[in-house]
Image (cartoon, rainbow, N blue to C red):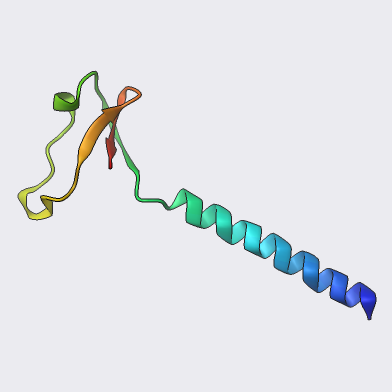
Length: 64
């Protein structure tokens, strides 16, 4: 009985860690494959999505 509870506990623990990693990797930051030196080097967002903010961070264009 105790061994079954330990197994269930370990499975839930690993499952929650796995879900946490998925949520962290799917954050709102999107990297573009465009190298930049200044913010003006990054592509402009389409007029439909005017709220998208693209900036140059660490040499790559990033959606903020």
